[in-house]
Image (cartoon, rainbow, N blue to C red):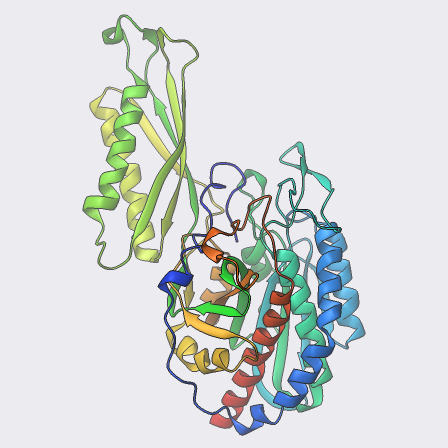
Length: 450
């Protein structure tokens, strides 16, 4: 999940409170007969691949790679998929892998996505396969860790690929797998990840009818699967405000223009957008200034001040409105103080992830059928995810899979992006069963509806 490693790092997934707000869905109706016929085979093959999935996860965890540097991970994935008979395309969006498997029976195209990149974080988890990796990020040498569960996502989808390939002749449809780089964003606001994969044809030939994805979440216990219709993660937009004043001596402020005072008023002005100009009964929003930098000496009023922060929304129209009002607010406040201000939004912002309401309703019974798991409706979180761009191109469903061991208080678990983020490896099997169940059930339902 994308949370910038600098100013946005403190904005964690907000999943630790999810369990408390969860609701149990209605009892599941019977699955289509075509799907039920495959359930024994699904259970057998999912069980058979469990040890492999854990081994892949440990290997990837010990050798983490940052965004657009996932060469080793991508090579491991591609070799595995080729051995299973998938049609494999490598180098999509630098290091991404797209693979297609056509089932033995006609049916819909189901896309499944896993993100591959790690974070510039120094691991503090005591496991034999802990990361000792270092890499270059934004021109600096940094420690690297899979602190957000992407190593698990890759291993899960590799396992799903093997399960589905073993049932190829019986599958009523086509599976498209997307192993995505750079979900955690790139330095210098470079566009990558899901958007670049789409621009380079990840959804072409064939185009998916639906797309499913998951995220391992420490705020839920292993065996818990959280989902909801509509927005499930927020947009993620980084901004910078540049304020221009006129330098003068601190004892004579009337001889210049104070950008610090102007900047302080802009910070307060921004809060009135969220509290007084947005219809909070529709969706909430979060507008936070994380840095404020100005001046070099206590008795000098400087020429300039600069602020950075993050905007989180759940509605695209609201997102655009707040961005517009931020620019107008900063400009007018600065003019009133004799200065000028400009608000710049980085081009690599993420849209909110919206679970298609019809698809979510259709697939919620499938989530209830997953062996050894309990599905629940959860509140939306404030983290950002570029799965959102896939879900803009095809109806999407993104779910949260618990990764904190049963019996432990998930609300107190170390959050994703923490150097102490810990994954219960039993959650990997739940992930494999989740994506397999969604794929097979959707194919069967779509085929039966024709």
